[in-house]
Amino acid sequence: MSRGDLPSNEGLAPPQHTEFQSGQTPEKKPESTHGIDILELIVLTEEELAEASKDLNKAEFKTAYTEASVASLQRLVFSFESLGVTTKIESGIVRVEAEDEKIEKLMEELLRSFLERSKAENIVDAKKLTEARDAANKDAMTGALNINGLETNFFEETKKINKDETYKGVGFVFLDIDHFKKLNDMYGQKVGDEVIMELVKRMQERTRTGDLVARVGGEEIVIVLTNITPKDFDSVAQDFHSYSKEKPITVTHEGEETEINITTSGGGHFLSPDQCREKQPRILLDIGIEKSNEAERRSKELGRDRMTLHHEMERQSDVLTKKEFARKYHKENNLNRRINNLKLDIETSEDLDIREIHTSILQEELIAIEQAVDRAYKAYLARALKELLIEERTLSPQTKRLKAIRERKRMIEQELGLSNP
Image 1: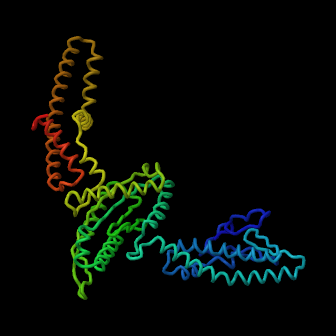
Image 2: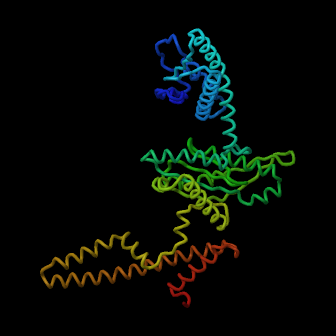
């Protein structure tokens, strides 16, 4: 709590903003014969803070205690003023003004007594407020964040992204238990709940301080990996999928311990720092969840028990045209520079014979490059066709993606001369 947090009476200059937080000892000021040092009565020492915030989030408790203390002080001041007693607060010192000095001192002692008693009450109020906020942000069954808690914590994380130029990026992982309905039907909801709780626990064990684990649906879990590089995110997302099914889950069924093996389908999506800074936190969170969920659905379409990364999914979905492939081939093989150098030799050569030689070399080079591109493109299409055929076999006839796959397959077959236009 800081002196700037303390209320000032109307018509007074605002208090000086000397920062004092709960858990610190305020600096000693010269003793005043008139007035009460509010901070000495309200601010918690480090020991008091540790004891008061035991089993609670310390940072959240400090915020709640500041709010409770300010509200308590305001109520006291308003109560005094309703009795016709004027109070003034300047630089953390509260003074009572009355025509009679004895009355002033008496009222100040009364105010001091109220403030001393309010410290314990403020701690109780802060605990209740912290617990209430915690309950509003947590999933009651698993202890993970709920969607509200995910929003609150993610919005705080975006503040760090905007302030830190070295921030690496944010990754979203969406996990869903495969065939969960069958599991519930076979063992009952209680066992299903135990499985969800164990999966959340496993994910929490694998996250770092600052990462977020939230239950956003029945058996759906979202993990937000903060300040992570794209390469690390790809690896960690796969690790989450592996760890989710690494060992059987022990549950109690019909009075006996039973081991259940589960698999999960997962999706991942990475957002760069620039992408994070371009959009509002609410939109950013929606994109992260939506894209990772979309990738998770692709995992299910491909037969479940796998992790699909959204950027890989996008690459697999789009088959390059020959023009796009040629541009990519030229860039990867540094062919544009080679061609430009030959053209430059032709333009700068003053000898006609040498120019003719360079022109002939350039033409031969262009023909050779075109043939190489044609061979490479056919090999690329053959690989793409093979991947589409594999994916086609894994999809059910009702899957929406099946139509798009068959259309791409038809176009490739035409390009390779394997079917009639």
